[in-house]
Image 1 (cartoon, helix red, strand yellow):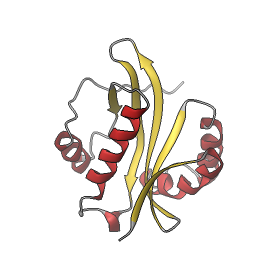
Image 2: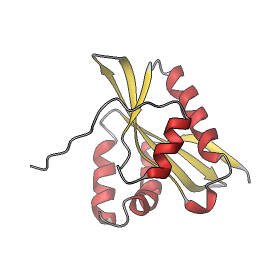
Image 3: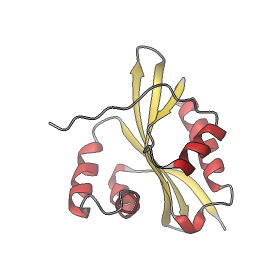
Image 4: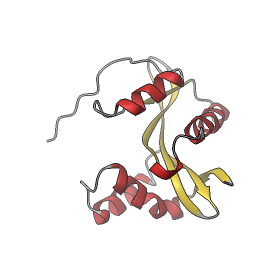
Length: 141
């Protein structure tokens, strides 16, 4: 397959909504996701994608910031590759591309959260050199 990695322009963010919808098991409506991504355009957010031709089959949201304990950092969010494209090393290639991209932007570290029950992702990220630093807490208000 002819996979390509690139940064999606803010004007094209709606293209990733179906993938994030899949990732969240349809727990958040398409309309809410579209609205939220529209807001995210102005919040230090960029989106890396994997495409075949012009079809988006993988996504990794990136939040850029400076952390007191690490310096310039990126937090990966909603990392997802469609199931039919997994198991062939594509995720490893995508992470290598993301690593190069964020290093060129001056980042010292990459952080991410993954759901506790998503065991395949834990193995993947350990194999990519990630370490568990702490717990992610959430309180809805």
